[in-house]
Length: 231
Ligand SMILES: Nc1ncnc2c1ncn2[C@@H]1O[C@H](COP(=O)(O)OP(=O)(O)OP(=O)(O)O)[C@@H](O)[C@H]1O
Image 1 (cartoon, rainbow, N blue to C red):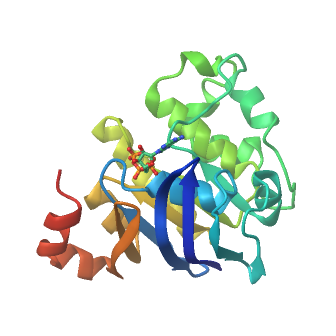
Image 2: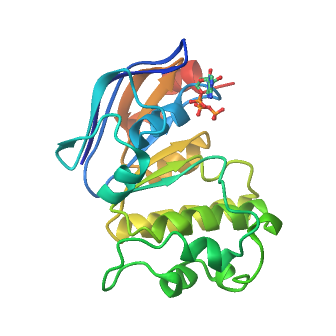
């Protein structure tokens, strides 16, 4: 469904991604693991068209879309959940969802379905997003992406900085998204959560993919984990 081939991405003159290639098939959750600053977010942003790669190609649903504008990627069916959450602080939870609604379809995501999925959000529909806790903001960011009715979601470190109970809840909801047919590329530093959720994974370090394998391979390969994931 998504094929990233040999991309090189820069911030101005800084070369950040080196020859990054990865693939995600329909219905999979694939994780992208790596330490702080390894290049996970830059990979996500390169796919979404926020930091277009200078070299290499990105294909989504069989169409080449390298460097395409983010709103066009969203129209093609990619939802983006950024690590810095970026909720509209002055709008209420409900308003944040209303302005995100796209591709309305029978049986698709709307506000009622989102509130069924995250009941805690339904209870604070009228609260300004700037006053939400970290966990509530994360639910809202995922909910906002769902309101665009995507077939594919880029989830950038959804559990970062959250309390264990919230992490557990998000993990089970992400697993439910997969059951509902969504395809996910998940950037994570929480190895346990990432491996439980994913079918396969890639390890990125210093802007290059160093390892790829099934979640079982990654779980068993202590040497690789120590080399690339331990701080
Ligand atoms: N806007 C920017 N301008 C210049 N350099 C940047 C910018 N954003 C990120 N970088 C650099 O790019 C490299 C990769 O960062 P990136 O955010 O992709 O890593 P990450 O794996 O997502 O880490 P984290 O978990 O800390 O977000 C880092 O060296 C970072 O300092």
